[in-house]
Length: 391
Ligand SMILES: Cc1ncc(COP(=O)(O)O)c(C=O)c1O
Image (cartoon, rainbow, N blue to C red; front, side):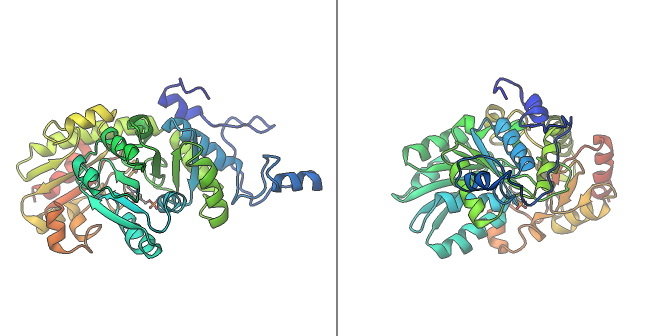
C-alpha cells in the first residue's frame, strides 16, 4: 500500500489480502499447516523456491497481514510478529547480538527487559550498561569498542522521561551500533522512531496495538536486512511466533489505533492538568504538560503526549493506597494500553523488588501513582480519583 496514505488510513486498510471469497473483513486462518497441490510444489516450498504457505510457525496469512499493516504504520520495510513483547525483545537480541557484545540500555526500561539482558543474555556473554534515558552524553560515554546495541523506551514507565531518539541514533550509528526503540507507549500513531533514525522498533502489541486488553503479542519492525530476513529465520527455528488468532485480534485493534491514541492522549492531558492543580497532589509526570522537563522534545518527536501519566500524592504509601482502594471505575491492575483506565502503585508492585534506596534514587516514591488513561468520560475518572484524594 502506498506510503503516502495517512496513519488513520494505513491502520484501517494496509496489509489486507483477500481470498477468492472476497471477504470484506480480514480472514482468520486458524490452521497449523497448509496443503500442497502436488509433491513438486511441496519440494519447491521447502526449498524456498515457491513463496506459498507451509506451516504456521513459518508463515500464516493472518499473521502476514498484521506484519504488513504494522510495517506500513511504522514506515518500515518489514515487520515480524512474535508471541509476546518479550519474545520481540528476545528475537532482537538473539539476531543482533553474540557472545562478547556490549549493550547500552536505558535504566528506565520494563523490568523484564532488564532481567532478560542481565540474567539470560548475561549467561551467554552479553554485557549491558545502564544509563539515564535523558542524558545523551552518558550514552556516548558508555560506548565500548564492542557496543552493538542501544536499547530504550520513550516515554519511560512510570516517570514518562523522554529520550532524544535522533540524538541517540546519531551516536549509535557513528559507533557502528544499532538503536532499538520500544515504541509501546506511543505506538506509530504518535511516534515513528525509524523516521527519527532508529534502526529497529520493538512492540508489546499486548498494550495499545490491541488496545482492549485481550491478547499477548509482540512485533519488531525495521529494514528487511535487519528484521524480515534474519528474524523470520530465527522465529521459524526457535519458535516464538504469534498465533493467528492473536494476530487477527491485534489486526482489528490497529483499525482504531489512531483514534484511540488521540482520544486517550487528550483525556490524559486533561487529567494531568487537573491533577497538577489538585491540593493533594505534589507532582505530575506527563510529557504534555509544559512543566515536564522534556516537554519541548516530546512536542518535536511525538504527535501527542500519550495516555500514561504518573502523579505523587501527599502522605506517601498510605495516601496513595487510599486513592487506589477508593476507585470504583478505574481498574487496579499492572497492565496498561487498554481503553479501560488502569491504576497501579509502582513502589509496591512493578518496582517492588528493587531496594528502597534504588527505588528512591530512580524517583519511584511511596506516594507515586501511575494512571494509564482509557476512553471513559474524563468527568467520571475525576470523580473516581477525587473520592480517594479527598478521603
Ligand atoms: C514497555 C514494555 N515493553 C515490553 C513489555 C513486554 O510485553 P509482553 O507482556 O507483551 O511480553 C511490556 C509489558 O508490560 C512493556 O510495558
